[in-house]
Image (cartoon, rainbow, N blue to C red; front, side, top):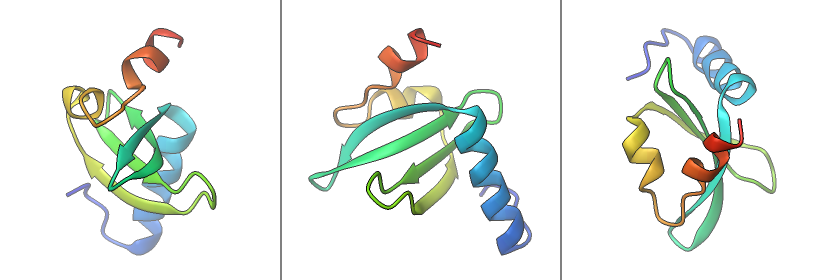
Length: 80
């Protein structure tokens, strides 16, 4: 649960996370995905890197995004 009450709030939360979060890549079901993680809000957005379509928005721990299959989060975070 991310606390959005409407579709518009959900979309805005995802866009805010994309704008303010750390971008990284990882593998899910054989596909390379782009993720964005914002530490303060613990929001995690998954997007299709080809179409920039938002696939999901959730609250996750930093450990979760760091340990995703093939995650580049730790390296990208150091670069910020």
